[in-house]
Image (cartoon, rainbow, N blue to C red):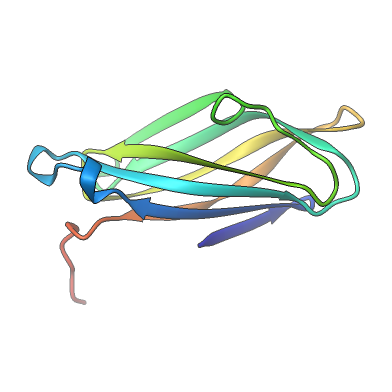
Length: 130
């Protein structure tokens, strides 16, 4: 589990390797990740946009930007939370994801909320001893 808090918005991410959807012989590795966004502040906020940077173990970076998450732009009143699950495929057996959500406060102010960097690890990643 990975966590970050920005301006009273807590983001928690839990990644899961999906063995049944992956095909290591074809360099196809798939993860799901569950995200929980909690409004621990005193102002209502709405998630407007997302921005992800996905890096595989060879250093190749894919950027994913767009409105909302899983087709929604949730509104979070103080004390409320929103959860969703999404996924990411890679051509390598490991990688890392990090990003941010653009939020709009009830007063119209836009601000970015950090999504913590989290590791995508499969059992097919060779172990390196130091």
